[in-house]
Length: 175
Ligand code: NI
Image (cartoon, rainbow, N blue to C red):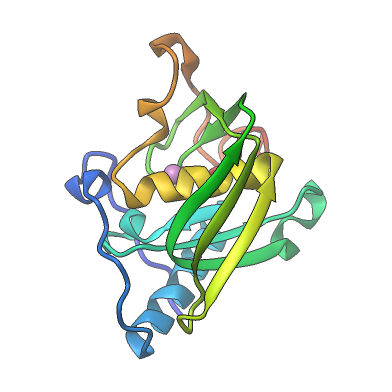
């Protein structure tokens, strides 16, 4: 168990396409544990491996619609994820742990179906709606070297926010 440091905003690893996971052994289990620890320590609702400098297709998500229950939200662990179906589109505010101090309004699908593998390599199939669907899209983007700032309609749709812990928290979800 360990909290790993986040890479800086300009780290090239954030712009690379991550490698597919092919080995579901001890190293992967330890990476996943550290990713969950890091996401929770940073008060994020999702984290992709490149955000801690590991260029592998792994994401973790912990989210609850009920804000008070955020830390007991459902935990999703996914390797080699792929969006196989998307429906609808809606702009909504999101922040990113890799772009501290900013938030943006990002159009995303309102429903996605995601296929991938769990921590043991077994196939999984997840259907997500609303903000959870948004988190999956944001984290899967990270695995392809994309950031939310690539998806905003214009520069006016990005603005400054208080870094986490320094202002009124909970305003912007960090992904
Ligand atoms: Ni992010």
